[in-house]
Image (cartoon, rainbow, N blue to C red; front, side, top):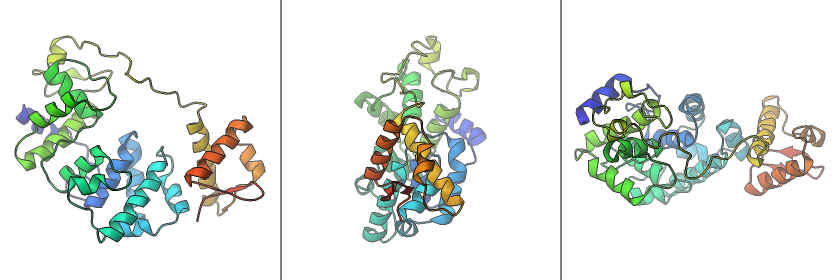
Length: 291
């Protein structure tokens, strides 16, 4: 199975700018945070521009909040950007601008969870550690257990399986992790797996059983984006970013009121953005990004 997976990876791996030893451990961490809950096709240009601006933790630590929020653009979940800057400050001040090389130190950094810590340990430092995301869980659970993986938090049984099948050789474990993530993203997808292109099709208990449970609803239904506070918050931040591109630092109150018809929801979202540190409200109720 390892041979088939590695051969598939050699032929099909996407040529992403942070792969194949072309970036620093810090660059890998940035790519992993940006890629969470975001399509990879959207991440590449943002990552490239971000790394041009702030190639290391120290440079990001010195940036203004307005610069960070603006550079994050439409990647979504902008709180990740602020947490990244918090992480950068810790790395710059406590680790002399070098990412720590142990799992326990990485996971203690602001905004860095199990997946990102494991990914950096594997992809940046070449350590033997299972990297478990939704794609990996889906591929492994389908292949070895013959059942659908329905999302939610990683279960102990899923973690045991990922650790049990991980190659013992550290170099091979890195390729294994990368290939499983890619396989889940491109071939063994959630709704329409490309069975004819799957290098593990002959081994998959899930395919052999006729893909039981495929297409069923997630354990936690996905919330609609349209009309939510998250959408309104994004509209406000994008309007401020666009104003900045025009050389304006302030979004006037009349401009703000035109952004969303429901003024009660609009004001609630403005208040929440202010509380989270994404914007500042001026006395005349105009808005600006923090300095």
